[in-house]
Image (cartoon, rainbow, N blue to C red; front, side):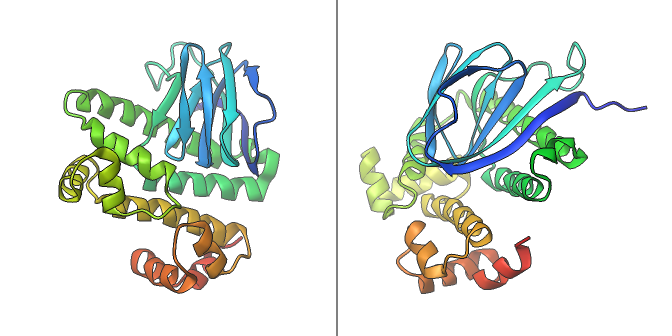
Length: 261
């Protein structure tokens, strides 16, 4: 009889909240923090950094985990234990931050985690579906770590800086001119190099991230499209509505009606 290689002890969704419950903690099992919105500073053992949407922070058992939010945060927290030694699935699990470049896949996994939390609450960990989502996050991190090794000698660090700038200023007024000026290059060069690194233009990249936030607000609040537009960097609800329909393929109202639980 098949036995899953991991036991999931916690699968929870928190936020928006101003900070974590504790500023420092040592866990007895593996922990993954998946940030949906906001940002926080962390220390995991000897590693430290800043995490925001697109980042998974892994905390191995017995390792000190310090954290401090930089703004209101919303995040997923999964605690699990490998049941076999050695691990039959992964040679090793990461420690610290893994940045996932496939944000569409990550957003989809987060959406299912939210749905599981709403339907099952603290019992979400007991569903086979939650275990499947844990494996999805682990495989995403494994693929990313392999890709990082392949990209090490050809990564365009300037474009990584551009992506980080977009994340930090996602809901501000963004333009090619503003991003290019931050990097000290021409907009045309920014477009060409960013597309080579991420397969999309900087504005398309920002639009994808913004629309994930829009979808989240449509499903989790009763805010009008006008109110959501002001929170997500759009001039008004009418313009956001046109962008949403163009990129998602349906009206925002239809998306809300068809997907709310």
